[in-house]
Length: 143
Image (cartoon, rainbow, N blue to C red; front, top):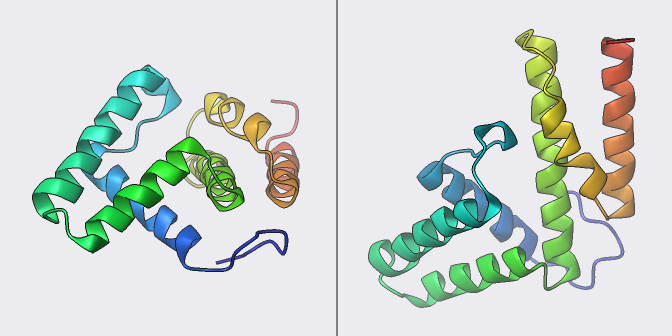
């Protein structure tokens, strides 16, 4: 994992948040902007998946409670770490779109960029987003 020096704590919290997000994607599916699902409904689906995971599957164990706390921290963007992980999630979405466009010759996936890159706040991740858009412009000039 790449950790910016400015984060207050160095722990497995960021890795855990990423893993929790991956588990939710497995349970709910990857909901793309093009699916037209409102943010409130996406959150409801993820919250229900988290409830099932934490309470039904993990039986409210201490680990389950930690997972739920980290998910709430991430969802609330309560810490610099949570904000950083959210920005990584946004960057990953744009990266995946570029890979689809380049490797699978899919139609332009502008909505993925519009829903991610402009919202990145962390300076380093924002720079990565700029580099990604520059690469996209080189791959697909004047499209």
